[in-house]
Image 1 (tube, rainbow, N blue to C red):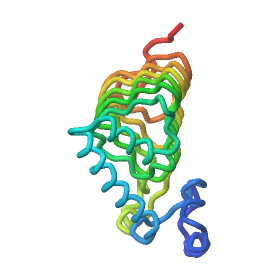
Image 2 (cartoon, helix red, strand yellow; image 1 turned 90 degrees about the horizontal axis):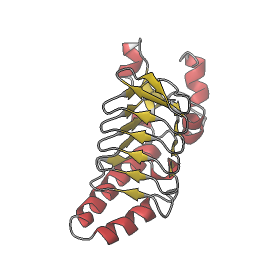
Image 3 (cartoon, helix red, strand yellow; image 1 turned 30 degrees about the vertical axis):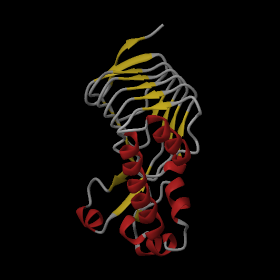
Image 4 (cartoon, rainbow, N blue to C red; image 1 turned 180 degrees about the vertical axis):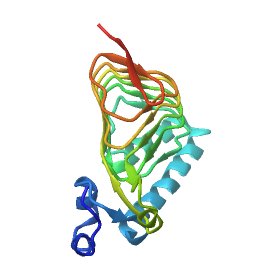
Length: 201
Protein backbone atom coordinates (compact mmCIF):
# COMPACT_ATOMS: atom_id res chain seq x y z
CA UNK A 1 0.00 0.00 0.00
CA UNK A 2 1.46 3.36 -1.08
CA UNK A 3 1.88 6.19 1.41
CA UNK A 4 -0.67 8.97 1.05
CA UNK A 5 1.71 11.75 0.09
CA UNK A 6 0.35 14.92 -1.54
CA UNK A 7 1.59 13.62 -4.91
CA UNK A 8 -0.18 10.28 -4.39
CA UNK A 9 -3.40 12.02 -3.36
CA UNK A 10 -3.23 14.15 -6.52
CA UNK A 11 -2.67 11.04 -8.67
CA UNK A 12 -5.61 9.23 -7.09
CA UNK A 13 -7.92 12.15 -7.86
CA UNK A 14 -7.71 11.22 -11.56
CA UNK A 15 -8.37 7.49 -11.11
CA UNK A 16 -11.88 6.04 -11.50
CA UNK A 17 -13.30 4.88 -8.19
CA UNK A 18 -13.75 1.25 -9.23
CA UNK A 19 -10.26 1.14 -10.70
CA UNK A 20 -9.08 2.31 -7.29
CA UNK A 21 -11.14 -0.38 -5.58
CA UNK A 22 -9.93 -3.16 -7.89
CA UNK A 23 -6.30 -2.08 -7.52
CA UNK A 24 -6.53 -1.80 -3.73
CA UNK A 25 -5.91 1.94 -3.85
CA UNK A 26 -6.90 4.47 -1.22
CA UNK A 27 -10.14 6.44 -1.63
CA UNK A 28 -12.43 8.56 0.52
CA UNK A 29 -15.94 7.16 0.64
CA UNK A 30 -17.42 10.53 1.65
CA UNK A 31 -16.05 12.05 -1.58
CA UNK A 32 -17.27 9.28 -3.90
CA UNK A 33 -20.93 10.02 -4.73
CA UNK A 34 -21.14 7.13 -7.23
CA UNK A 35 -20.25 4.63 -4.52
CA UNK A 36 -22.51 6.29 -1.97
CA UNK A 37 -25.44 6.12 -4.38
CA UNK A 38 -24.91 2.39 -4.98
CA UNK A 39 -24.70 1.62 -1.26
CA UNK A 40 -27.81 3.64 -0.41
CA UNK A 41 -29.82 2.20 -3.29
CA UNK A 42 -28.74 -1.31 -2.37
CA UNK A 43 -29.80 -0.81 1.25
CA UNK A 44 -33.27 0.25 0.12
CA UNK A 45 -33.54 -2.66 -2.30
CA UNK A 46 -32.51 -5.22 0.32
CA UNK A 47 -35.10 -3.88 2.74
CA UNK A 48 -37.83 -4.01 0.07
CA UNK A 49 -36.95 -7.62 -0.76
CA UNK A 50 -36.94 -8.52 2.95
CA UNK A 51 -40.40 -6.97 3.28
CA UNK A 52 -41.71 -8.96 0.30
CA UNK A 53 -40.24 -12.15 1.77
CA UNK A 54 -42.52 -11.81 4.80
CA UNK A 55 -45.49 -12.83 2.66
CA UNK A 56 -44.19 -14.08 -0.70
CA UNK A 57 -40.91 -16.03 -0.76
CA UNK A 58 -41.15 -16.86 -4.45
CA UNK A 59 -41.43 -13.19 -5.42
CA UNK A 60 -38.67 -12.23 -2.99
CA UNK A 61 -36.41 -14.82 -4.57
CA UNK A 62 -37.19 -13.48 -8.04
CA UNK A 63 -36.36 -9.96 -6.91
CA UNK A 64 -33.13 -11.18 -5.31
CA UNK A 65 -32.07 -12.84 -8.54
CA UNK A 66 -32.64 -9.55 -10.34
CA UNK A 67 -30.65 -7.73 -7.65
CA UNK A 68 -27.75 -10.21 -7.80
CA UNK A 69 -26.94 -10.74 -11.50
CA UNK A 70 -23.98 -13.02 -10.69
CA UNK A 71 -25.88 -15.43 -8.43
CA UNK A 72 -26.38 -18.93 -9.84
CA UNK A 73 -29.98 -19.76 -10.64
CA UNK A 74 -30.01 -22.66 -8.19
CA UNK A 75 -28.31 -20.82 -5.33
CA UNK A 76 -30.53 -20.27 -2.28
CA UNK A 77 -30.27 -17.25 0.03
CA UNK A 78 -32.53 -17.09 3.06
CA UNK A 79 -34.21 -13.91 4.29
CA UNK A 80 -33.84 -11.52 5.93
CA UNK A 81 -30.57 -10.32 4.43
CA UNK A 82 -28.70 -7.78 6.53
CA UNK A 83 -26.88 -6.00 3.70
CA UNK A 84 -25.22 -6.49 0.34
CA UNK A 85 -23.75 -3.12 -0.57
CA UNK A 86 -22.47 -3.81 -4.11
CA UNK A 87 -24.62 -6.49 -5.78
CA UNK A 88 -22.78 -6.32 -9.10
CA UNK A 89 -19.52 -7.27 -7.37
CA UNK A 90 -20.85 -10.40 -5.65
CA UNK A 91 -20.68 -13.85 -7.28
CA UNK A 92 -22.46 -16.87 -5.77
CA UNK A 93 -21.82 -20.30 -7.31
CA UNK A 94 -24.06 -23.21 -8.24
CA UNK A 95 -26.16 -24.89 -5.53
CA UNK A 96 -24.77 -22.72 -2.74
CA UNK A 97 -26.96 -22.16 0.31
CA UNK A 98 -26.69 -19.03 2.46
CA UNK A 99 -28.70 -18.76 5.66
CA UNK A 100 -30.37 -15.61 7.00
CA UNK A 101 -28.53 -12.50 8.13
CA UNK A 102 -25.87 -12.28 5.41
CA UNK A 103 -23.86 -9.06 5.55
CA UNK A 104 -21.39 -8.05 2.83
CA UNK A 105 -19.45 -4.78 3.00
CA UNK A 106 -18.25 -2.98 0.84
CA UNK A 107 -17.03 -2.41 -2.76
CA UNK A 108 -14.41 -5.15 -3.06
CA UNK A 109 -15.27 -8.19 -5.14
CA UNK A 110 -16.67 -11.16 -3.20
CA UNK A 111 -16.75 -14.61 -4.78
CA UNK A 112 -18.49 -17.54 -3.09
CA UNK A 113 -17.98 -20.88 -4.84
CA UNK A 114 -20.33 -23.73 -5.70
CA UNK A 115 -21.96 -26.15 -3.25
CA UNK A 116 -21.16 -24.02 -0.20
CA UNK A 117 -23.19 -23.90 3.00
CA UNK A 118 -22.95 -20.51 4.74
CA UNK A 119 -24.46 -20.34 8.23
CA UNK A 120 -26.63 -17.55 9.64
CA UNK A 121 -25.32 -14.06 10.37
CA UNK A 122 -22.07 -14.44 8.46
CA UNK A 123 -20.18 -11.24 7.65
CA UNK A 124 -17.79 -10.64 4.76
CA UNK A 125 -15.83 -7.38 4.94
CA UNK A 126 -13.69 -6.05 2.07
CA UNK A 127 -12.89 -2.48 3.29
CA UNK A 128 -10.13 -1.42 5.62
CA UNK A 129 -8.81 1.83 7.06
CA UNK A 130 -5.32 2.85 8.08
CA UNK A 131 -4.43 0.80 11.17
CA UNK A 132 -1.90 3.25 12.61
CA UNK A 133 -2.75 6.76 11.41
CA UNK A 134 -5.76 8.28 13.15
CA UNK A 135 -5.56 11.43 10.99
CA UNK A 136 -6.12 9.37 7.83
CA UNK A 137 -8.98 7.54 9.51
CA UNK A 138 -10.58 10.85 10.45
CA UNK A 139 -10.30 11.95 6.83
CA UNK A 140 -12.10 8.76 5.78
CA UNK A 141 -9.37 7.14 3.70
CA UNK A 142 -10.00 3.46 3.05
CA UNK A 143 -9.22 0.68 0.58
CA UNK A 144 -10.84 -2.62 -0.36
CA UNK A 145 -9.37 -6.09 -0.81
CA UNK A 146 -11.35 -8.93 -2.43
CA UNK A 147 -12.64 -12.03 -0.64
CA UNK A 148 -12.67 -15.39 -2.40
CA UNK A 149 -14.34 -18.53 -0.99
CA UNK A 150 -13.82 -21.81 -2.85
CA UNK A 151 -16.21 -24.66 -3.62
CA UNK A 152 -17.75 -27.00 -1.03
CA UNK A 153 -17.05 -24.76 1.95
CA UNK A 154 -19.10 -24.96 5.15
CA UNK A 155 -19.37 -21.99 7.51
CA UNK A 156 -20.95 -22.20 10.94
CA UNK A 157 -22.99 -19.28 12.22
CA UNK A 158 -21.56 -15.79 12.72
CA UNK A 159 -18.33 -16.35 10.80
CA UNK A 160 -16.44 -13.16 9.93
CA UNK A 161 -14.10 -13.02 6.92
CA UNK A 162 -11.77 -10.03 6.74
CA UNK A 163 -10.46 -8.12 3.70
CA UNK A 164 -8.19 -9.85 1.24
CA UNK A 165 -8.80 -13.39 2.48
CA UNK A 166 -8.86 -16.35 0.09
CA UNK A 167 -10.38 -19.59 1.40
CA UNK A 168 -9.70 -22.79 -0.54
CA UNK A 169 -12.05 -25.63 -1.50
CA UNK A 170 -13.65 -27.97 1.04
CA UNK A 171 -12.95 -25.78 4.06
CA UNK A 172 -14.97 -26.01 7.28
CA UNK A 173 -15.05 -22.81 9.34
CA UNK A 174 -16.28 -23.15 12.91
CA UNK A 175 -19.06 -20.98 14.27
CA UNK A 176 -17.92 -17.56 15.42
CA UNK A 177 -14.52 -17.81 13.71
CA UNK A 178 -12.77 -14.65 12.52
CA UNK A 179 -10.81 -15.47 9.38
CA UNK A 180 -7.94 -13.01 9.12
CA UNK A 181 -5.65 -14.72 6.60
CA UNK A 182 -5.76 -17.16 3.68
CA UNK A 183 -6.91 -20.73 4.36
CA UNK A 184 -5.72 -23.69 2.25
CA UNK A 185 -8.09 -26.31 0.84
CA UNK A 186 -9.26 -29.35 2.79
CA UNK A 187 -8.90 -28.09 6.34
CA UNK A 188 -11.07 -27.15 9.32
CA UNK A 189 -10.42 -23.79 10.99
CA UNK A 190 -11.87 -22.20 14.11
CA UNK A 191 -11.21 -19.47 16.62
CA UNK A 192 -10.30 -15.79 16.69
CA UNK A 193 -8.12 -15.47 14.78
CA UNK A 194 -9.05 -18.63 12.94
CA UNK A 195 -6.39 -21.33 12.83
CA UNK A 196 -6.21 -24.78 11.28
CA UNK A 197 -7.37 -27.42 13.74
CA UNK A 198 -7.79 -30.41 11.42
CA UNK A 199 -6.92 -31.64 7.96
CA UNK A 200 -9.86 -33.08 6.01
CA UNK A 201 -9.70 -36.12 3.73
